[in-house]
Length: 188
Image 1 (spheres, rainbow, N blue to C red):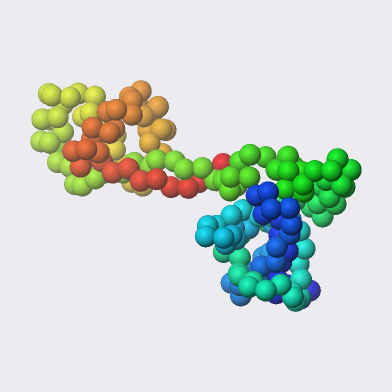
Image 2: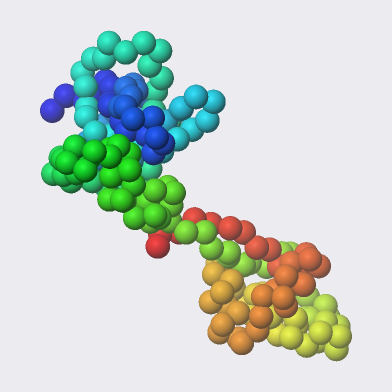
């Protein structure tokens, strides 16, 4: 199968027509009909669904797609046919039909990912520091001991649930530089 040089997309905006974009070399084998992509549109980026792959296009000013959103095709060719039929039968724009076919999470490009906080020790912590902290803030000291025992970063929510402490205690340790939080995108 030959990789397409161009794709025809329906953008998630009310423009009532399909647009052509080129497929960059880095994405060539991964773009198929039904794939969600991020494309340049006017001065911004927009989300779109690939409705056709093309070997060539006569459109002027073609720009490349920016990225693929998600792992693979979201809509099958049969669903795209159904969307076109619904649009024709009910006299509504295809973008509106596509919006109703896609779950909100997919429409917003959060396909299968969510952001979570991970905690790890901020710096080397000695026993004297923990003992001083235990006198002033025993809950922070308990959390600090748990964090210092971590070998790899752990989901903050899991750690807090395990030792029955709240987010405020963790934020206080982060503010003092005794713990670090980092945000990671993980699969849903």
